[in-house]
Each structure stands twice: as structure tokens, then as C-alpha cells.
Image 1 (tube, rainbow, N blue to C red):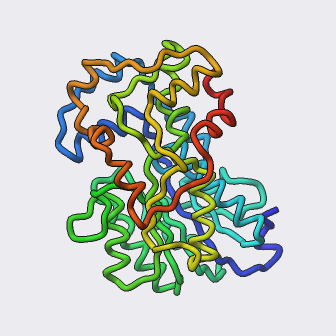
Image 2: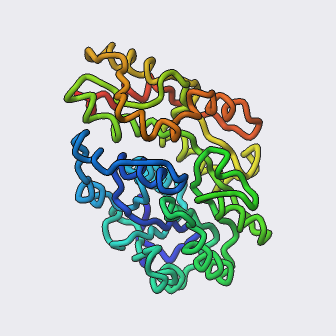
Length: 328
């Protein structure tokens, strides 16, 4: 479906670059603790029986910090392929990609790999950047690649970021927000996609507790969450590459069609299998509650009301129905 570019000689218009970091859910919490100077206890690994999933995560081909992002990359690739848009796929292995897709080795920790896609001699007009989002300052690694891409006359950069005040463009921006702040400062053409919470996090972060204890173990007590499915994000990504004029702005916040609490998620799951609604682990809450406190304070409600927001189409009930096999 995607075609072998070496045989077809089609001009390459799209490139996707990424990296597999292999983080678990607890790893993400600890990284946030370090970033925001929150207290943490590594003993969580033992208390909650979270085991490193590196071998599983590396089985995916384009991955930065979560399985959800890998699925997003493949969904975007599928849409581009169906539209007849040739793609170069960059990953750390350079080989584990969908059949028929032109691929190169690309690693944010190895600048020597940055030129691999351009060395193929094809014209690349658009780059979809899945940067090292768990680095404290992703721009340190991404900036040299952007400079190289600009020298190769790349027209537009699409950046996967995240919703939140910390990624708002400006001098105080943090994490991936620094990347699109830099792109804006340089006057480059870009779109940064800022999703809230992946629906896929339910089957990635909480499936162990659901299967073994009939529990969603979480520190968010009541706050509504704007879960958005990677399917919807991929469709918006496709528009950012092929029909940018259809987007309301170049820094859209992405939320699902409705805001739901974890209690409501548990109730939906209960319709398929008997789960307790929610239990908060006090010892878990004690150290890292501040990280997720913004949800109980209505942060996703604020994002959903932002005029820059784009709502997805796949609600959490429909998503659970499509993926219920993961929880049984």
C-alpha cells in the first residue's frame, strides 16, 4: 500500500522521526517528580509490582515514551499511505517498520543518524517530530536536527507535544513546549499537536490493576479527564500535514468528545466486567498527588473550553468497546 520508494521513484514528502525510550507508567511519574522537584520513593516499583516493559515496548517500531505514541505514528502512517503520500520512517533500529515502508535509522542520542533520511536523495517537505519528550530539555537534541532540516528546505514541522500550561509557547515553556517555541522564534512553518490524556493509557497504565485487583489505582479523585484516542489524534495529524488550513490554529489542544472521571470509566468497564469503581492508595497519594492535582481542580475542563481546542470523535465508551479484550 505504501510502495517501495526506491522502485517507484516517487518524491518523498513526509518523514517521521522518533525514538524508543521504553518507559513504564511509574517511570513517567518519577520523571515528572524529578522535573517538578516533587518527592518520590523508588520503592513504588516493588509495592505495586510494576515491572520494566522494555522488551515489550521495543517490539514496537516508532516509540518515544509510550505505546500510545507508537500507535499514533502507525495510524498517521496508514492515513498517509492510503492517501498516496510516500513516507520515510525513522526509528532507532531502522528496520522494524511496516512492510513496504522506506525506513532509516534515527536516534535522538546519535546526531550522526540525523542526515540518513536526507542522504536518500529524496525531497522531504514535511517532518513529523516525535521528540525525546521525557528529556528535561528536548530542544537540546531536537534543535540540531531542525537546523539540518531547514538547510534541506523542509517546508513544515509537525510536533507532538502535550496539553498544559507548561507547554504554552514562550520563554517559560518546558519540555516539548520549548521545541515549538523555538520554531516560532525562528519564523518556521509548524503545527504543534497538544493532546491531553491518551485513551490508550487505560490499557497501558492501569490494565494490571484492573485484571488482578478489579481496581483502577489512581490519585485523581474526581476530576474529569479529556481522554482522546490515538485514532483521532492521527486524523488531526494527517490534516496538519496535508490540509493545514482546515485547522483552527497551529497549536491546537486535543481533547476527546467528552470529559469523564475515572469513576465513570470504571462504571463503563463494569458494564463489561465487574470492577470496583475506584480506590485511592493513600501511600501512593501522599507523595505524588500534586502531579495530578490539576485534574481535580478542573484543568481539563479549562483546556476543553480553550478556543484553540479540537475535539476528537471517539468517546471513551466507544474506545473501551473497541479495546475491551485488553482488559479481560
